Image 1 (spheres, helix red, strand yellow):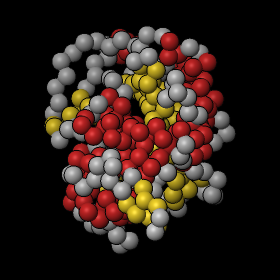
Image 2 (image 1 turned 90 degrees about the horizontal axis):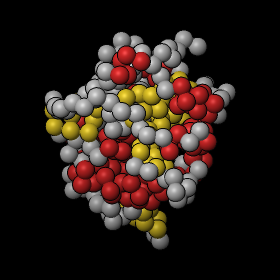
Image 3 (image 1 turned 30 degrees about the vertical axis):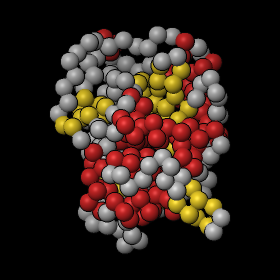
Length: 314
């Protein structure tokens, strides 16, 4: 109720509405190569629902650790006497100990630096009046730095911010302003706008196996792995410390025939009935619904050519 559908891709919207079903939450479908939002279901929550990122923060933590040379794809952390985990397994199974170790080695200033670099604490959209930004804690949490990079404690993030982060991963490191056209005229005149270029391209190939592993055999199995239509994603499950809302996050993208699509899901509940795995099932249903419409066989929406000038580079 209250969503504005003018200018939305109605095929994408129908797929997202059907996938969300009876769940309380929001779904965003976006083109990561332009920053265009194709559909937002439950726009108030998507624009203003700033909650703890839960384990989706591990995407940022992984790229921070790789960029700073703290970890590499083969880096292992001994969990038990006979078991160690590397980056791929840590992402696929959302291993908290691995990413807590990354946070302790990064330190508070670096954690905040990379959070800001990926757009946390600021609006992700351009000229979306209803949008409100998330927050970044001004001091380390009492539970320790490891909680920032394993559970997202100290951050609050909106579905819009997660959409921008996942889009940057999907497109190779460009953080676009997200734009939500409100009419056919705005679609026809659409020009992508770059917020900044992120110098993370060398490490994206290191995190993709773990994001695919999450869907293939890890925490996001409900998304439905397909060797021909792979989905890359990261789940998040926790309770927001400020609102005591139970959360289920899933940030994802797919690659089919050279076309990519980002689907982000946030589920909220006052009881323990939502989780990242459940959110991944909602996203999986979005992709399945779109495949049923032969959506990925169609040409990607065209936008006006423009020289893209980044305001900042990190």
